Length: 142
Length: 439
Image (cartoon, each protein chain N blue to C red):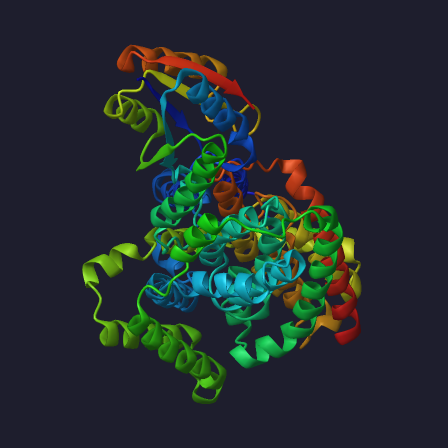
């Protein structure tokens, strides 16, 4: 049985990605793992008293987002697992894919202001992901 | 007016720093520090060969740093670092969810008010970091687009921050410069803040009427459990101690004037008391203090010291004086709206520090302004409320948008501005009318 790894942030932007991952898990009878990566780099340009443990706040939020994704999967009778990591998305995604021995990786690609990668950079990343994990990569645009 | 090379070089450096901050080329602290260092290098190295390049030396620059502001921010940071570990705000937000039985209207009202009040006493960014992640989860539980709660919360934070001397940096910087006591400041600011908050509540209810009407009435038990698990009091003993110290410190802020206690000494008294009582790991405690913010404040004071020494402030005052035509009313309106507009696109801290000496000189130049603090209040409210205009207008806005993005909700520039512009125009109208009537 293969493993589908779906990187998600939850929320409305990630819904198409999550739905696609769930439907692929149903079709293929694969194990489904949702991944949330805590990323605090948006604070890197702000000079304000960051005395709060931001990473733990985001970890807690990530846990909630993944609980919602699990519920969504459960409605389709898929029992999904969850993984939360902290660090650069690229590194963490590759590492988790290797750990769970993912055969398929489902990724969302938000376009516009909030895109994490530009087009060329994204293609390079997909190449790197495939090379390092040996997994098939499915892109869902949002 | 003497337009020597130091004038143009300093002006260039200052504008470059503002651009670097506005466009987020580098971290804000790196931008102001680079500006301060550039001014010193021009002063010392350039000034050795060309005396006209003397701008401001190190010792002179240090005299421009308002240490009362620096130590007040430091004291508050130490308190916030310990308080944030109690989980109290999470617990409070979750209680609001339970008490309102998930009624989306009442819940929105409670969360917006909670943010506004929290921001009056804690830094806006801290309020955002503590409240927004849980707000997103609460909104998702009731099946609501989190933007319907989060954006009004950001706007409430910037409005609520103006309520006290410690709520928002412009209030702290200008309030301390005026020598205002905590109580005196709060009494003067309260009417404008209360009216603005009421208007914000009305505007939010109207802007998000469809989303709120469509909220879910039944919730998933699993999600409620998840929500509840993240909304526990983490350390009841720390909460009790922080609560006692917080209340006593607040009382001290109110009576500080009587003893001639500077606000910084009050904040440091509370922070030191809490450190001795709680006995945290000092190494960790001091590491958690955000030194970049303190360096940012010092850098901006130095930079503006250079701007003042180079004659730029005097030049700006002449322009404003000409535009205002020696009318205090016109100068007040100009200060409110210009402060609001500029703070809407760049960080309001450098703007306030730079605008304060302009207001000082303007106050001396306008006969009707003698003994009348109206222009200072115009600067406080303009800078505090103007931050609501765009999502780059304040650190709290940027943090909230970043947190939303982390939960998979995109907020475009225009989307934020739809709500922000409406609230800024409305609240600045309130400010203008209030200052016109009051002063």
